[in-house]
Amino acid sequence: MNITDLIRNVFAHRIRAFERYASEPGRIQEDVLRKLVAEAENTEWGKKYSYSSIKSSDDFSTGVPVNDYESLKPYVERMRHGEQNLIWPSKVDWYAQSSGTTNDKSKYIPVTAEGLKNIHYKGGADCVAAYLDINRESRFFSGKGLILGGSFNKDANPDGSRTGDLSAVLMQNINPLVNMIRVPSKEVALLSNWEEKIGRLAAGTMNEHVTNLSGVPSWMLVVIKKVLELKGVDTVEQVWPDLEVFFHGGVSFAPYREQYKSLIRSDRMHYVETYNASEGFFGIQTDLSDPSMMLMIDYDVYYEFIPMDEFGKEHPQTRKLTEVELGKNYAMLITTSCGLWRYMIGDTVMFTSRNPYKFKITGRTKHFINAFGEELIVDNAEKGLMAACRATGAQVLEYTAAPVFMDDKGKCRHQWLVEFSVMPDSVEHFASVLDDTLKEVNSDYEAKRTADIALQPLEVVVARKDLFHDWLASKGKLGGQHKVPRLSNGREYMDKLLEMNKS
Image (cartoon, rainbow, N blue to C red; front, side):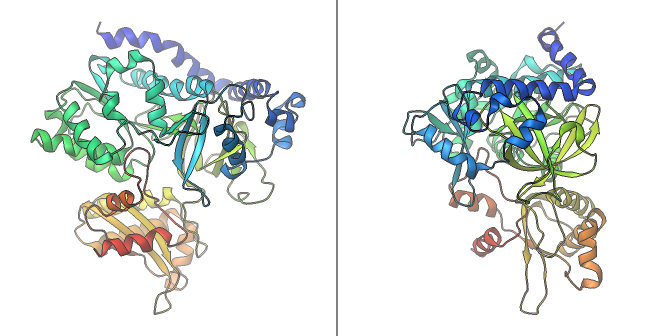
């Protein structure tokens, strides 16, 4: 018996716990909510919304408003100046910095000790548990894990608490024993200069025995290519022959899948999607043949869902987990032990199963195109791009899309800016297949495209090499959890990118 088989037994209790996800989802979630409300009863927030009188999830949904970062921000700012017991009883020493809102460059998400233990680290451990249950031949613990880390914001909060990318917060607080089975060193992992980090990270890991990867697909791809360049080889197996799994999240893996397959050719390689964010850890892929993720319902997270036809209303009707319908698009709300109460995380999801509850991320509440009533979401875009790549032999590195409201000929259309790692046989062919597939997967788009009256055929603009990298660099957002916005209902991103594409 190898070391991985021995350690697998440590995770057996979690596999048994997953079995309750199918049989007792309502009870599990009610227990989570009851615990969270009880713990926060004497906070300023808890007193404001009479948590002592909340006896059920119905009381909670009628007595506490839906929130976003703007409504949370006044409490966060007070906490960052030293006040405590506002939205959660324990002292908050850490904040995860993520992409900002309309009014702010960054959001500062509280990360409590309870949130670290009962959400983020529990999610990381469950990833390993689920994978070892999937792959009984695994030798996961025979080597080390390459984990991409973020960086800290050098500007300390006024109260002395610390801020950084979530991955940096997690790395700084992780059990020291875990550092024995991960690379690179903490010094390299937390470097803020991404260009320097890539070189040092690649040099420091290319001679290690790496069996697993964790990170955002776009940035991990940059690291892998640098490692291959430094080693002077073509495939990852020539560097890490025992590499067997990549835990990925943050952005859809679909545009990158073919590139990874071209660089990692081993038939023993596995890809496991996770849903982790600054606000929490929510889902894990538990079946390699099913891209949907299982919702993790026994963490310190209580879930609610807003049907997208209710989204944007002043008092939207929410659904409990047990009330969701399969195949319907929902905005997700979370309540957590980090003091996020009925918090709109900004992602949209669609459930594919109830036994247990499995879902896929379909997009962002703010990342869509609905300029002409077409209601195009990221899930549609990913399916269209995958079809276009298959038909033309292309590989997409990065992309974004936005509406052209009216050109000099009075025509409206969608404009796609695509950076290819492998060019299609014809850009026109690529655009045609993309357009046709969007019609197949989105009836609203198909209706608007009928007879080219409301919406003209989409346009694909080829981005120069490293355009999106340079754009992120110009915004100070290289590496970590920073992402290219896939769809936008306006042209703020597109016009700047097109301007840079000329240089």
